Amino acid sequence: MEVDPEPEDAHLANGEEDDGFLADLTSSIPGIDEAMSFAEVMKQVQTMDYSAIVFDTAPTGHTLRLLQFPTVLEKGLNKILSLKSMMGGMMAQLAKMMGGQEEGEDEMITKMAELKTVVEKVNVQFKDPEMTTFVCVCIPEFLSLYETERLVQELAKFEIDTHNIVINQVLFPERAGGSKLLGSRIKMQQKYLDQFYDLYEDFHIVKMPLLEEEVRGVEALRSFSNSLVHPYKPPPAPEMEDEISKLQQKIIELEAEIRALKA
Image (tube, rainbow, N blue to C red; front, side):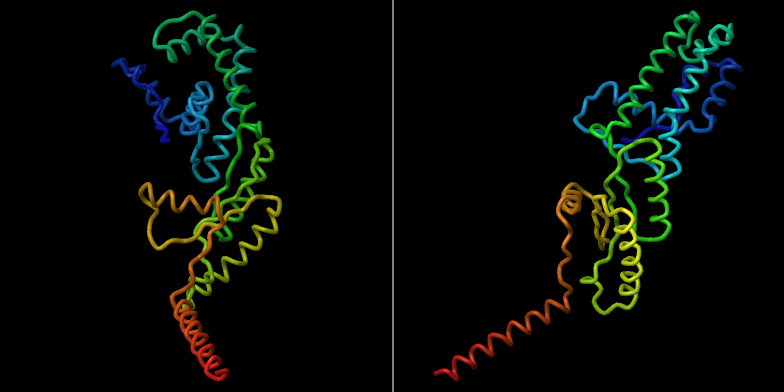
């Protein structure tokens, strides 16, 4: 799914100067991307219209901010609810911002309490390994290994399950042929692949090949995704196929000579 990071603030910009300023202010709030993404998470958790929901998250930094958001939001709601008696007219103003019309303070507090309940539910589901798991996707290079380790450590702090790693763009020796460049890249990748297996010996690690073309279209996606379930086996290099063919022909000739000698 694609989440629009622009907040739904059309109801704020109704031609009044203050409301227009408020709309601009809302759209520039730091972390609004994470807020909109988390809103989509809450929506899907509440409806549960699908047997499985896959969120393709942004790079590590954005992902960690998204995972921190429910905790930050829950703390903020707790603070607001605890200080509701001191908020006075500000609560009514907030109600106008969120609902587009004047509402009573009690109704605003009720909405916040309901939101807090949903946030707590999302937090619980995030930490339930039977319902939520995180699959790390990386490439066999130093920076990607570093970012993966950072992500795994942070996920452990958040108590979010992760035991799968997909290593993408892997070069296999069978495809190198006589290329020195490919041979050097394979040697470099193997060093980091070994480190992945050392660091995550209790993880399920899947290696996905570097392909000659983009994976586009349903059939290409199905073919490529098959390697997520069944270990990828690279086809023999063309040079090796020629060598195998020559050896097979040599075997046939030798067998014919043996039969002739026996006769």
